[in-house]
Length: 328
Ligand SMILES: Nc1nc2c(ncn2[C@@H]2O[C@H](COP(=O)(O)OP(=O)(O)O)[C@@H](O)[C@H]2O)c(=O)[nH]1
Ligand SMILES: [Mg+2]
Image (cartoon, rainbow, N blue to C red; front, top):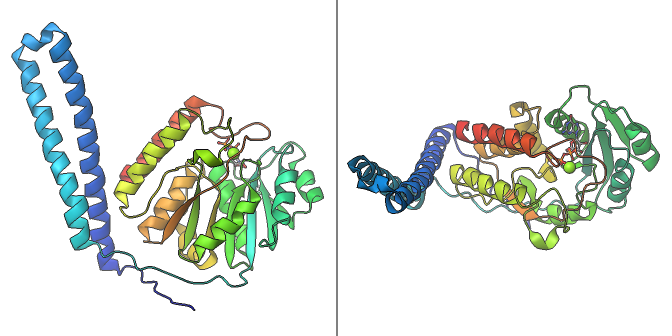
């Protein structure tokens, strides 16, 4: 049975969609900031002599008022305005049948892991083609990928994680019905492709999330800081695009229908490490249907070139992600 219930928003609805989303995000942010200020001023009031000063009481009253008003407005926007102004997306069911599934793997000086990653994907019965895009590697990445049996190994000369991901999808798109984007560092499990394909029957793009403890190895780059940080920032995106559940900002492993990719590709511009949310934020702006599913996440083989091992780099990437979210 095939029920095509896809209805993209007409252009007039898009403006309303954007402004209601922004209002939700800005109001919730004001509530969060005001909560922090209220707690801080209350501590000063209770534990220091500053409590004797009238100005502290005045500031406390102002911040309480901001907290209350922004909180109430946020609830009204979420539970009233959204219902009145943003029509819910229709349920979609489009079977994939015997869709051609092409995998694009990213690699950069990844000779330790790219061979195993290619072999894992080639062993998946659902996968028809595996393409490796390596980012001008100085080691044997290309040779190892070829020896492992990759159908193609392409060199992307533009440096950066985003450039590599964009090229990997462009290469995988040729002749495909479905594109799988994944890192060739063995953190992800190729066999999870079947989980992605099951959910893709109901949407345009399926994102992986590394936030599920039961599917994560004991020691990975999703540590005590990166994991909760990712989840909190993902909730900001969820506030902006209310309706789509999100828990991870940086999971490369994702699957997209080729038609959706062609609608999206010209909007993709971020070459650096914040490419991952850039891609799904642009898709959400187009009101694409996105489902996030838990995936296995293992310890990386070889050295991390991204944020995996460097908290300062992670903080910089987080700032770039926040700029994306508040500017969306
Ligand atoms: N950071 C980074 N990653 C790149 C680049 N080119 C390709 N990649 C690939 O993008 C993926 C993400 O990088 P990785 O080192 O795993 O970062 P991590 O997942 O944050 O530890 C890997 O498959 C890299 O090999 C690049 O210029 N910079
Ligand atoms: Mg990685």
